[in-house]
Length: 62
Image (spheres, rainbow, N blue to C red):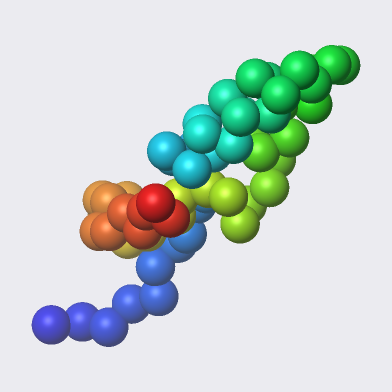
Protein backbone atom coordinates (compact mmCIF):
# COMPACT_ATOMS: atom_id res chain seq x y z
CA UNK A 1 0.00 0.00 0.00
CA UNK A 2 1.41 3.37 -1.04
CA UNK A 3 0.68 6.68 0.58
CA UNK A 4 -0.22 9.50 -1.78
CA UNK A 5 -1.57 13.02 -1.52
CA UNK A 6 -4.79 13.22 -3.50
CA UNK A 7 -5.68 15.99 -5.92
CA UNK A 8 -8.86 17.77 -4.81
CA UNK A 9 -11.33 19.38 -7.18
CA UNK A 10 -14.53 21.23 -6.22
CA UNK A 11 -17.59 19.96 -8.12
CA UNK A 12 -21.21 21.17 -7.92
CA UNK A 13 -23.34 19.01 -5.66
CA UNK A 14 -26.75 18.98 -4.01
CA UNK A 15 -25.96 21.90 -1.67
CA UNK A 16 -24.80 24.04 -4.58
CA UNK A 17 -27.99 23.38 -6.54
CA UNK A 18 -30.21 23.96 -3.47
CA UNK A 19 -28.57 27.33 -2.81
CA UNK A 20 -28.91 28.30 -6.48
CA UNK A 21 -32.59 27.33 -6.51
CA UNK A 22 -33.25 29.12 -3.21
CA UNK A 23 -31.67 32.35 -4.41
CA UNK A 24 -33.59 32.13 -7.70
CA UNK A 25 -36.92 31.48 -5.92
CA UNK A 26 -36.29 34.47 -3.65
CA UNK A 27 -36.54 36.65 -6.73
CA UNK A 28 -32.89 37.39 -7.28
CA UNK A 29 -32.07 39.46 -10.34
CA UNK A 30 -28.90 39.80 -12.44
CA UNK A 31 -27.93 36.11 -12.30
CA UNK A 32 -26.98 36.22 -8.61
CA UNK A 33 -28.31 32.67 -8.31
CA UNK A 34 -25.07 31.51 -10.01
CA UNK A 35 -22.90 32.70 -7.10
CA UNK A 36 -22.98 29.28 -5.31
CA UNK A 37 -21.11 27.79 -8.28
CA UNK A 38 -18.20 30.16 -7.56
CA UNK A 39 -17.94 29.42 -3.82
CA UNK A 40 -15.78 26.35 -3.14
CA UNK A 41 -17.14 25.88 0.40
CA UNK A 42 -20.61 25.16 -1.06
CA UNK A 43 -19.37 22.49 -3.46
CA UNK A 44 -18.60 18.81 -3.08
CA UNK A 45 -14.94 17.77 -3.22
CA UNK A 46 -13.62 15.08 -5.58
CA UNK A 47 -10.38 13.34 -4.54
CA UNK A 48 -8.40 11.76 -7.36
CA UNK A 49 -5.11 9.87 -7.56
CA UNK A 50 -2.36 12.01 -9.14
CA UNK A 51 -0.78 8.92 -10.73
CA UNK A 52 -3.67 7.02 -12.32
CA UNK A 53 -6.27 9.85 -12.23
CA UNK A 54 -8.88 7.52 -10.77
CA UNK A 55 -11.50 9.00 -8.44
CA UNK A 56 -10.84 7.73 -4.92
CA UNK A 57 -13.48 9.55 -2.88
CA UNK A 58 -16.25 12.12 -3.27
CA UNK A 59 -16.90 14.26 -0.19
CA UNK A 60 -20.52 15.39 -0.24
CA UNK A 61 -21.40 18.51 1.74
CA UNK A 62 -25.05 17.51 2.06
